[in-house]
Amino acid sequence: MRSVLQLDEALPFQQRAAWLQRLGWLGMLMFVLAGSVGGFGQGPFARRAQDSGNGLLSLEYDRVAREGAVTRSEIRIDPAAIRNGHVDLHLGKEYLARVQIVSVVPAPAAMSLTPDGVRYRFSAVPTARALQLRIDSEPVHAGLAPLELKLADGTGLQVRQAVLP
Image (cartoon, rainbow, N blue to C red; front, side, top):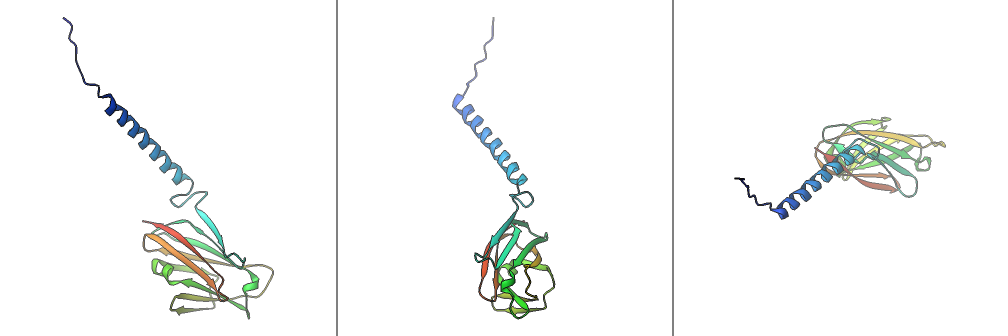
């Protein structure tokens, strides 16, 4: 005598499970691709450049930074912004509340606290070349760090940097 095992196939359940499994594989693939192109800090699309609109101030920075790791912001100031042998650069207090400044290169000639942030004064001579600055900072809080830069004439730019734990 032949024995026949009767099982419920539950075809709708199996189809849903297969669909969810494919969705999970797609999610993992997207996660790996995002990481490889810079979605989590390092990669070809990890850096971003922003301009003030009038060309006097530009910033190149990491879109995504890591809490506790040093991140570099490169600032270019056009020679037309130099007044009386110096240029003033203001850094907003919201950014300063979320990061610790590690270094500023070249070293500013003076630094002063203002109610809405910090003002750095750099000695500069008007030349045909832009003044290049570098600010290394270490994020101390995860989340969005709003970075605001302003020159003495009011020219400025604002960006948001994502900080991952």
